[in-house]
Amino acid sequence: MKTTIYWGRANSFLGGRLCEALDVSPGRFTLESFPDDEIRVEIKEEIQENDVYLLQPTHPPVAGHLLELLLLADAARRAGAARITGVIPYFGYARQDRRDRGGEPVGARLMADLLSTRLDRLITVDLHNPAIEGFFGLPVVRLSAVPLLAEALKPVEPEKMVLVAPDLGAVKLAQGYADILDLPVAYLHKVRESGRKVTVRRIIGSVEGKTPIIVDDMISTGGTIVKAAEALIREGAREEITVAATHGLLVGDCLERFSDLPIRRVLVTDSINQEGRGYDPLSVVGLARILAEAIRGLRG
Ligand code: R5P
Image 1 (spheres, rainbow, N blue to C red):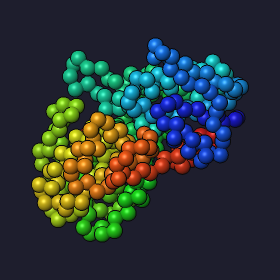
Image 2: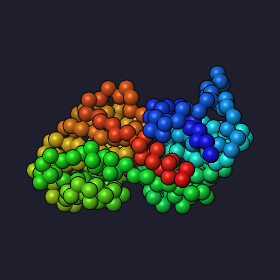
Image 3: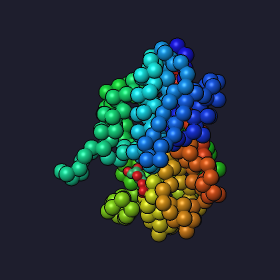
Image 4: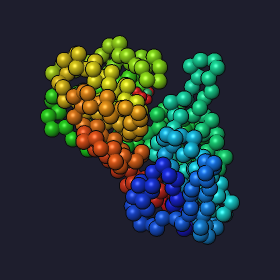
C-alpha cells in the first residue's frame, strides 16, 4: 500500500522532517483560507487505496487546526484512501479530561469523538493524561518524547541535580525521567486558581543547594513553571534552572516571564513548531524519527 503524507498549517516544519525521515515525497494538496475564514482543502493526486497519514498538532488556534485536520481527513476518505491515520503530536483540549464542576463539558472526549468520525487510527505523543486513549473508538499509538528529552538533558554533575515535578500530575512523568537519568525527584504541591494563576503550597523532597530540572508534559502560559521556579529559589535551590517539557505552547508573554527568572535552558520538542521564537535558552528536540518509526511499524 502506498504511503502518502499530508499536513495542516499547524506544523509544516515537522511535516517536511517526517517525509525526510520516511524517505517519501510530500503529498500534493492545497490548503487555504477564503476571505470569510472558511478553509478549503484539495488533494491533488490519486490516492485510491493509499495508506494516508495526516500530521497536525492541535495547538492554538485549536479550533482552526482541528477543523483543517478533519477537512483533510474527509477529503482523503472521499478520495478513496484505504486507511487514514491522524498524527497528532500535541493533542489540544487534553486537560479537559474530566468535569470538575457540574456545568462543564468533557472537552477531550468531544475532540476524540470528532476525530473518530474521520480517522481510522491515531499516533500521538505524551498525552496529558494517558487515559484519554480510551476516549477514542479507534487504535491509538501513544509515543513518549521522555527518552529523547532525557538524553538531551545529559546532567554533567548528577550529584548536584534534582528533577522537579511542578505539580502532582507530573509525578509519574518525573519518575520516568528519574529512571533514565538516575536522579532524585522533588514534588511541588501546586494549586491552580485560574487559567493564568497558580500557587505552590509546599515542596516535598530536598532541593537546597541543588540545580533543578523542572519537567512537565507541556508549557502553556508558563505560570506553572514560574511559580515552581520561584518556590525552588525560596527553598534554596541553585539559581540555574533547566526546564524540560514535551509540548512548548509558550503562549502570550510566557518567554518574557521566563526571562525574569534564572532559567538557563528550556528544552521542548517540535510537536509545536518552535522556529522564530528568538529566545536563546530554548533548545528543540525533533520528533520526526520516532514518528517515522511508529509509521513504519504500522505499515508492517
Ligand atoms: C497541568 O496539568 C499541565 O501538566 C501543565 O502543568 C500546565 O498545563 C501548564 O500550563 P501553564 O504553563 O499555563 O501553567
